[in-house]
Amino acid sequence: MNENEIINDIIKGNKLKYSLLVEKNQQMIFRACLGLVHHHEDAEDLTQEVFIKAYQALVSFKGDSSFSTWLYRIAINLSLTHLRKKKNRNIISSIEELFKVRASTDNNPESDTINNEQRTIIEKAIDSLPENQKIAFTLSKYDELKQAEIAEIMMISEGAVESLLQRAKKNLQKKLSQYKKK
Amino acid sequence: MNCKKSSGLMLAYKYLNKDQLNELHNHLRKCETCSDIFKKMMQLEDFIEEQKKLNLSKDFSSRIMEQISSNPIRTIQPAWQIQTKRLLAAASITAIIWMGYKAGSFYNATTDSPNIEQEFAYINDVALESIDSWIME
Image (spheres, rainbow over the protein chains, first blue to last red):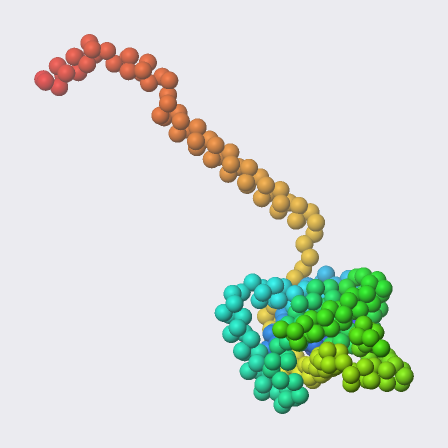
C-alpha cells in the first residue's frame, strides 16, 4: 500500500492508519525541529504539533510532493514561529530557558564530549544564521538530505541550496572565530 | 599556506584529499588562530552528532494517535461559502455604521430642533390663564 492510498484511507475514516505515517516520519521531523530549536522538549512538542496539524489538514494535501516534504514544510514553519516568539520574550525568561536547556542536556551522558560553554557558543552561532541558511544547514546536517530534496522542501533551485549551505558554513566559521577574540 | 586558504580547506574538510589534508594540518600546527577555528568547527560537528542521537519518547506515536481521536480532519469549504461569509460580514459592518449614523441624527433632532420656538408659540397667555383658573377651582 503506497502513501497516497494510506492517506485516502485515513480521510475516509480509517484513523488508525495514520500511525503508519507517524512512525515512518517522526524521527526525521524531530531531527529537523531539533536542528532549528536545539531544545529536546521543545523539538518533541513541535513534532507533535506538526503531526496533529498535518492530520487536521490532510484533505488539503494534494500529493504534488511527497508526504514527508509536506511535513518538513509544516515543521519548518512551526519551528520558525516558535523561535520568533521565543526571541520576543524578555531577557529574564530567556536566561531561565537557557538554564532549562542546560539542565535537560546535562542529563544526557553523550553531552560529556562538549562542555556547556562550548555548546552555548555553537547554539548562538547557528541561531545567528539568516533563516534560509539555517533551514538549509539543518536539513543538510541533521537530516542528511540531498541538495535536491532540500531544494524541493524550500521551493528553490539546487544551485540556491548549494549557495545557502556555503554561506552558512562561512558564516558559522566567522561567528565561531569571533568568540576567541572576545 | 596562508590563513585564507586554510579557512577554505576547513569548509571542505570532508572532501579533502591526502595532500590537502597534510597541507592543512601543517598550517594548523603553526597557526594558533586557525587551529582554534578548526577546533571550534570540529566541536560544531560533534554538537550536531550529539543532538542527532537524541530520540523521541517511546510513547510518542501512541500520544499522537490519542490526540487525533478527538481531532477531526478539517473539511475544505467550497469557494462560494467563503465568499458568502465575506459578503455577510461586509453587509453587517455597513449596517452597524449606518445605524450608528442614524442614532447620531436622532440625538441631534431632539436637542437642536429649529421648531422648538414655534412649538412654544402655541402656548399663549390666554390659554395659560384658563388652565390656571381651572387649577384654582
